[in-house]
Length: 326
Image 1: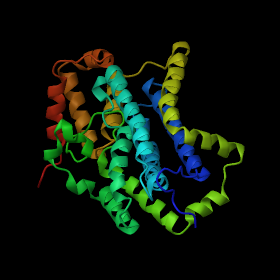
Image 2 (image 1 turned 90 degrees about the horizontal axis):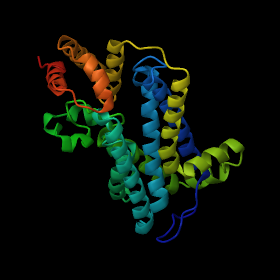
Image 3 (image 1 turned 180 degrees about the vertical axis):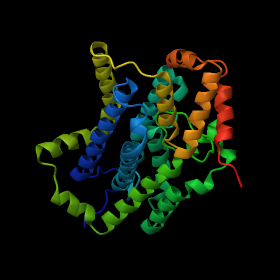
């Protein structure tokens, strides 16, 4: 069995890990393309937030974070190479801040304040503490983080500065929200799996069995080796392509009520129960229609301009839509 690299040594790349990361990127591109079609009105509203699409999105996020854990073990399991770790972490952190800034500019009501890259930064830092923890204990803690979230929700976490924990009782309005609970769980599962794989020489066996020599494997491996660049580039390219297509063949006009309902549900169900989202979105829609604010919100809101009275409606409907104690 090969030992993990010592401090200062560059670990050998495992083609299968790069291919898996590339496959996750491909799956993400498919999901984002469907989201773009929905955003421009070519497919039904809220399509990507329900059923199989919702499960697809969560499995993609989980696979990325699982691979973060595995890669952390392979790169730093024996001795943390601080220079390499800090450089990589700084790159991901800068990319996360860039995404926050860009989405705050274009979609201020649903900007990404703690998306997948933010989660990777925090999880990578926390994951270092588990590199010396027995893998079975790490596995147990990871499962506990995934399964315990519904039981830990509390109003004390409703403060804006604590939303990233994922334990608030109010919905987080964001186009991509990957909070610590439950998403640090897959990272710990990846760390445990990576340590077990190294301990029993499974990683070495995987590296020898598959080298990604075929054209598909080489393509996915290349994308996996440059995952951050691919992540940052693919969505602007996809949404730009759909936008250009919409200039030539516009989507059919949408019903504003259906459009708002779909957008509301799509955002809400990412981190909340479907029953809550149904009540919340219906309450908000009714209030907007009664106050004749729906049309204003659909025009000014898309331009990032605040609409007076909307925040009050959101807060009121959030409270009224929460489950009531018997």
